[in-house]
Length: 163
Image 1 (cartoon, rainbow, N blue to C red):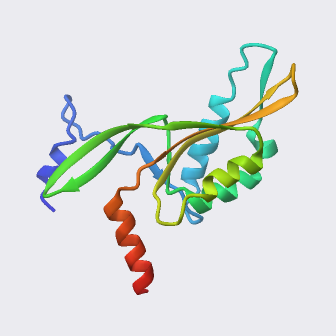
Image 2 (cartoon, helix red, strand yellow):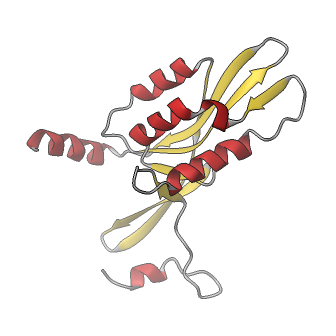
Image 3 (tube, rainbow, N blue to C red):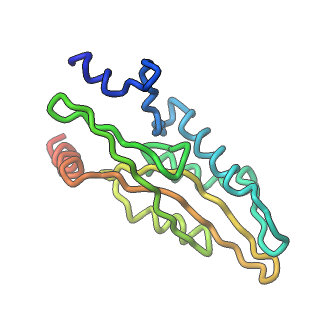
């Protein structure tokens, strides 16, 4: 690898910027899960009125964490993140923004992510459970992004067939 590729990431002050917008999620390194949990707590901490409240993730998130470990590849510090790719010796950066989905039950939430196969590359920012206190209705809001490109998905499928 040519070191000049890293120079493309150099900031105005001459230091090389940390490109870490995404953190891997796996069982051996819990840091990605910590990022996800902290984002979920931070996004749910703004109870600006009495009508709608958030539920602390440590109370309800155990089933969702299993799904996050199984389905997601990365966690992001922000709903907007950079994805870096090295193509033909040039470093490319793409800024992406998470999609937001809302669900009425935890089962709907889990069914939604069950539709993604193991060939997908998913990034998660947060998952927040809201309760409308006037109607006693819960809502789950998930901020995520599918960053799978078609060639990678095809390659993963072929690899699974060959192996």
